[in-house]
Image (cartoon, rainbow, N blue to C red):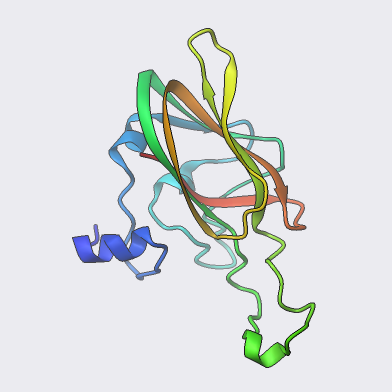
Length: 171
């Protein structure tokens, strides 16, 4: 595990080889599942693709979901997401592409629209928030909700067919 200064850097999405981010206690206590796909990589503390052979992300389609479920209702104060910003793409610095260029755009792989829902005591789901215009790879949001289950539902990317999420954590 990385030292505290390194954990702070990793928490802010810095990549430090051979150092993993420590998953929050709250997320470690829950059962993480998905409506489709494998969720194992979301708990390994590495928030990026490491090679062409290892995606190291949950991959799904818009409308599918990731879900944290607890034995009893818990207070969640914040959600932290790390999404696919296509770090392997050829990057062009803005000063090199001119003032107006179609080359300078949000990566198609990045999640644009998504929502977080919480399960009520009666089993119904309520939307805690909906993001309509995300353009950040690292996304944090205050939640302030108590529930037994929370689910993240991707709704739209900036153009890619598949959704890739490297980190989904509750705090």
